[in-house]
Length: 274
Image 1: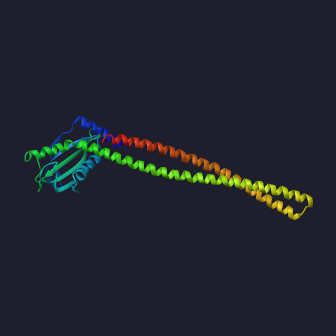
Image 2: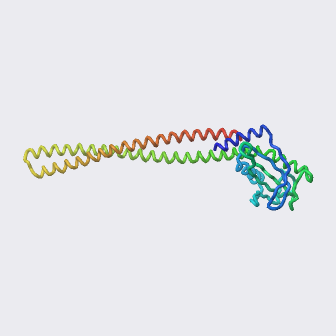
Image 3: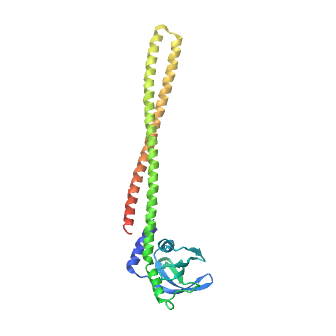
């Protein structure tokens, strides 16, 4: 993400500076020497430069190509950007230089077939069109970097929204469990109250006639009451854990909402640069 933002900023500077220069060159395509044109693009990642050119040729110019011998190759196709003929177009990119002087070198070969490569000496008009195309690559790279950034931010928003949906479901699940546990605690309290009332009544009867059966019933009811009390205590403890879990989920939802808002704002800013 930072790299793409850096690319957008850097390429904008390059556009303003207009410091790129195109040179004629001789390049190797396999073992064959071809005449072509080259330009160096500074301060932009290699994959972004290469991707921008592929996007330009294949999505904007509708050329059909393949990768061969380290080149992207588009054979025998019309390309009005260069001229009126059908062309064989080859391009390759590579990183050159070190550290601060590092750049991406773009080499472009345009042929009218049978490797009759365009040069200023044999076709100055088409050569100027090729030069103009390369000189304006920085704008294409900037547009491509913005496109990548937009796609990245949209994907991030989709992921965050999916996360929010999952967190919301988790929050609902915990809340339902809390409500159910609270209902169970209330129900247990009601049963305990009823059991205690039964014990009181049984004790009064036992005082009158000391019936062993009543004493046995008192013991049984007392045991049931103790079981209910233990269950109630356990449920109250579990409430603490559920409340903690609910608070954590709510915090996550808050962070998620902030991230969505922040990302949408960033997306709007990037889209304004198109």
